[in-house]
Length: 165
Image 1: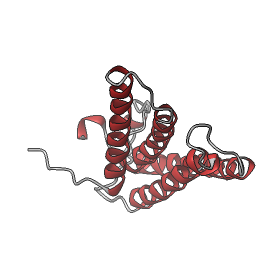
Image 2 (image 1 turned 135 degrees about the vertical axis):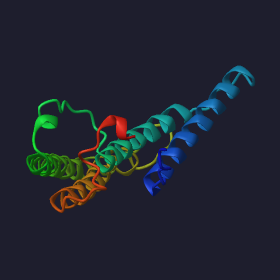
Image 3 (image 1 turned 180 degrees about the vertical axis):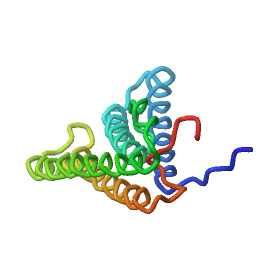
């Protein structure tokens, strides 16, 4: 029998963002087709929420070890070598996410002073801050998973197979 998985704070953030987006889009449809009017801000708001939801979801995928990968050759290796390669894989993820965070912070600084067209909010925080923020969370999760793999923790997430849930 499969054990119930406990939801994390990130799961609740994704659920809240998705629910908010559904309510806003439903309100836009209602206003447009029932009241024969249009809400100007809903498309822009939904787009920004979707961007945040995507990047937070990518960070959670690092935490759970559920990013897509081809592991046919790795699965044939002995457990010790598998753990070593999993650690190398996670170090590469940390380097990649570190570069994304670095350039993301540069983008946040470059877009300072720009405002969104419909909501008149600071564009660098509403949109561009999602990239470095999610990258930093991804780095945190990758480091945790790498430490877990080095300790050969049975609860490690980075060597999970899709059928494990």
